[in-house]
Length: 227
Image (tube, rainbow, N blue to C red; front, top):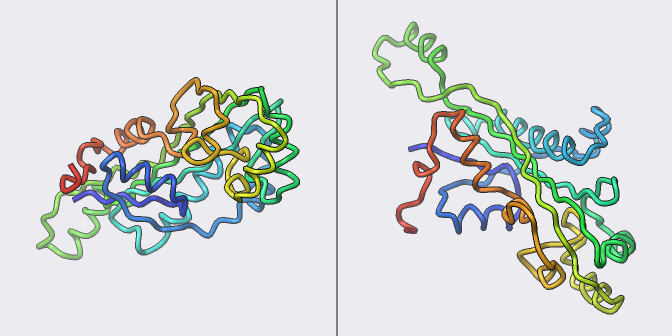
C-alpha cells in the first residue's frame, strides 16, 4: 500500500485530502521559513511558494518516519500589488493589508513539492547483494518534483467594521494574504479565477499531476473505507 505523508500542520490541507478521499499521514517539518528565504533571497511570490514547499517536503523526507512513503509539502504566498504577502501574524499588519485588498484582487500562489522516499531499483540491487532472499519489486522512482498552482482572488468591498470584526476572530492572522476561503473569510471573496483548492492551500489536481512522476495514480491513495 502506497503511503502519502503531508508535510504540513495546516488543518485546511489535511481536510482537503480527507474530503477528497485521499489516505494520508501528517508529519510536520521544522523549517524556519524566514531563514530559507534569507538564504536564497527569493522575492517573487511564485518562486517563494515553491521554494518553501520544497524545503518542507525535503525536511520531512529526511526523517526516518518517511522511509518508504511519498511526501508532499505545500506553501502559499499571496501576491498583491507586486508584493509577496505571507502570514500577517499581527492585527495591525492584517488590517493594513485588508484595507488595501478591499474591492480589489490578487493572486494566491500555492507551491507543491513531492519527494518519493520509496526504494528504487538501485537500492534494491544493493539490498540483494546483502540478502539474496530479497524478492520485493522496487517501487520508488527517486522523484523529487514540484509545481505551483495559482488562482486570482477577487475581494468584495469590506467596511472597516467588517475588517475589524474579522481580525478579532483571529482567523486571518495565520493565513497567507490574511484571508481564508473555506472559513469566515469566504464571506468577503467575490470570485476566484483558477483552482479554488489552490486558494485553500493544496491543489488536488496538481498533486495528481505530481504523482505521475512517482508512477502512482491518485486512485491508489483513495481510502476505500471512506467511499
